[in-house]
Amino acid sequence: DIQMTQSPSSLSASVGDRITITCRASQSISTYLNWYQQKPGKAPKVLIYAAASLYSGVPSRFSGSGSGTAFTLTISSLQPEDFAAYYCQQTYSTPWTFGQGTRVEIK
Amino acid sequence: EVQLVESGGGLVQPGGSLRLSCAASGFTFSNYGMTWVRQAPGKGLEWVAIIDQDDSQKRNVDSVQGRFTISRDNAKNSLYLEMNSLRAEDTAMYYCARILLSSSWVFDYWGQGTLVTVSS
Image (cartoon, rainbow over all chains, first blue to last red):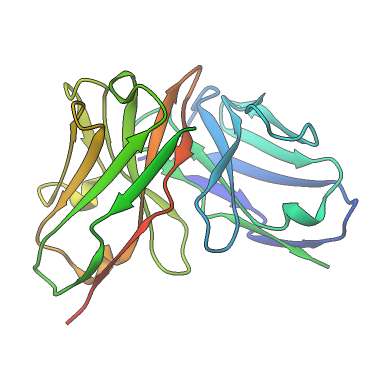
């Protein structure tokens, strides 16, 4: 199975900050990498698919990059509604696996 | 508007069975692969199973192999997860999601989830 490791597990930031979350795969997954946002008590929502493609309707302050084993999700200017948990997911091979999540909290 | 509505969760004893359903609307259900994802209380996301558009291919995570069965009825726009021999570690919120076949397999719409609690 492909292991996905996110860092950090949590971070505290202020509105307007630029933040970056890293996701590493235990083997190459090309660009079969998606990012999701989840708020408490809600279902996840897709932000980025295929490593760098912004899903329809997602604000442009979200961006993704990477290929192979190393990926990043960047929020260029953190907004109040962005405080949530973020998960990466590989769909290169089954079992599809998620990272353990990164919780973004208000400083 | 795309909608996915799960049902069938509840409290069940270890070793028991449940059948989850996911009612789809707002899109042509038979054109999309579908999947189940679960989340244990306070934990991260775990992919459970996938079924393709015409029920010809299924995959699941090893931890549910032989116990859970994913299925669909395209005539009823419905997805199912038959869960048998349930264990305490199966306690989770179960989400159904639609799979968008783009340059990666992304889960673009999710239901609100149905809670399964396995406890005596």
